[in-house]
Image 1 (cartoon, protein in one colour):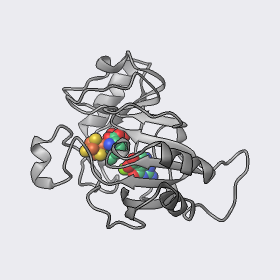
Image 2: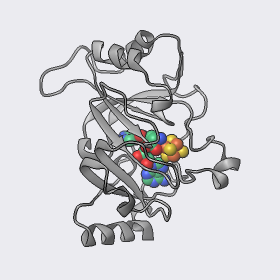
Image 3: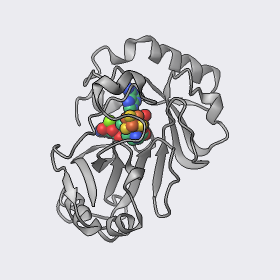
Length: 221
Ligand SMILES: C[S@@+](CC[C@H](N)C(=O)[O-])C[C@H]1O[C@@H](n2cnc3c(N)ncnc32)[C@H](O)[C@@H]1O
Ligand SMILES: Nc1nc2[nH]cc(C(=O)O)c2c(=O)[nH]1
Ligand code: SF4
Ligand SMILES: [Mg+2]
């Protein structure tokens, strides 16, 4: 049984795949925050910008089998269109997707023709078969992942600064300015001091590149 908050088709707003069409599968629940506002201040991750509680979002629900969930994801991809330049992409996010993703689901999504990307907080090992992994460490939470495609660190986090994660092998190292968790659109979002600090850190440490949440700038999901 898989609990999914929402399934939607949009452009990947962040990272190395920015601008690429993808179906987003947002799993319910997280191990670093309950998702309730009254618990935010005491949560390990306290700046989350996402509602991942329950299964009541667009396309959300409880899926009994992996094939059932993969079919719901496939139904969001436009027609049967697919070629070598544009393999269907699913971004599994949440909440924390690795609390629920298993071999059965990875196989079903592959059988449905998808390349599988995940957005994860790095506290769970990345299972075999994931095609693109994005790891985003949070506060004091122990990161067990040692290798990924993108390391995408929200900045600044006093308890999770970039130097702590440079041993993790990644093809891309990104700093994401911490956004106001309650602000949906980017109006003034990137004029705050988090952004200025992230810019300065990248300039001083050129291994790191700036990542912006472009979906908020153009106001898409
Ligand atoms: C909502 S999380 C879900 C996936 C996973 N739990 C994680 O934390 O990576 C998706 C992405 O949004 C980022 N994010 C969450 N809140 C943010 C904020 N206030 N500002 C910038 N990025 C944020 C996370 O760091 C992560 O890269
Ligand atoms: N467009 C868009 N791109 C995204 N990249 C990562 C997201 C996430 O919430 O995991 C996200 C999201 O919520 N929307
Ligand atoms: S780990 Fe990810 S989903 Fe969980 S609270 Fe933090 S940003 Fe949100
Ligand atoms: Mg998001």
